[in-house]
Image (cartoon, rainbow, N blue to C red):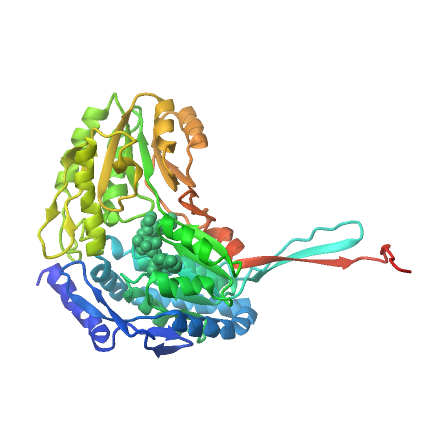
Length: 502
Ligand code: NAD
């Protein structure tokens, strides 16, 4: 039996329960039907129906918000050591079901097993990392003034909403939910409608690992009803959102009436800048990895290659050869490097840029074609002879599609790199230290890597500038979002209090 066949057989076993019961909402530790019935989840691999999914609306969000509210005080007041132990149990339980999570995620989203096998482990790591921060999360400062002993403390903000997208949904959900729980918040999670399976596994796993009922609630549904209702709900104190930039604007508007605190992780059109003094072999590997891994459906992908004109021809020639060699195929085949795009809608969007590129006068140097018609497969694509004004250089395509743009000087590279509405990540390849220092200082991005692909380190801040987001995750930055700073001043003596009306 091939590795692919073995994986398909295992997946079939894991999907049986979803076929029988569908994906239900989970509210206050109980399975609930969706108040608007069900919708269907399909696989991008062969367009087959995976299962029914509870179609939640404002009523279900209301029930979940009330459950999160009811569970809040006990969770907040639980001794930190106990909360920590539960979160560590969750991490262990995720690892124990890593294969199930990975296979379901691949089938639901089209991501390849090559990359998703690590997504569950990264999810576990998110829980482990934030569990270890629980003990000191409440710690504050002592700021003495002449008449007062001033102390600060941090308290969890309350029940929060977490709204996640379909790209690497398990990892991203844990990335938001783990620090919220560690801070002492309770959560209502609204996963993306296009990838509901692993959010269901996550809530099950957390409860089995000892998370009290109602601390994490999951409501499936669509953005304009369930998502909007979550943003508008009075009992929900903050929204942690990951998704498109235009949805981010809606999140802010919808939460305005109830004064929501928002954390927005949004889109990107990230540049990778390759100077001619760089280690070009390593730069080539990183350029390819950062746009063609994870199907290019990755917010931090480097979708604009800015290559110095002195090396452009040679670099692009090597790039074309490698891109044409990338293996597109079944996501459960361990040899596959690119699987199908997540939905028909997204496939249509990504492939529409092939014509847009031609109309704008760019060259399709590799790919630019669909593969078969069983699922939503495309060849990895490279556009050359492009300039930064073209739509293929300005708009987030969010697929395995790279636009290559030449530059001659450092100043020009910087101008092109910053000439975008987005500012999530930037990647700079040069062996000139002074240039790297100056360039990164002026590059408009929340996260920059020099001579490296994106390597996430959990204590560092994660987030974007401009249309790529507001706020930071990671380390203590996550707690800044999920917690309120509280100041308490204690009089140290009988200082003079102004006496009115005496
Ligand atoms: P999306 O904005 O369409 O959807 C994200 C989530 O928002 C879904 O759960 C959806 O149901 C919900 N939603 C939609 N409309 C809503 C509304 N009016 N109110 C409340 N919720 C609503 O994004 P997507 O297409 O699922 O995901 C891809 C996008 O996510 C890309 O732009 C990508 O760059 C971005 N992303 C950013 C990061 C980051 O860290 N910056 C990480 C991953 C993905």
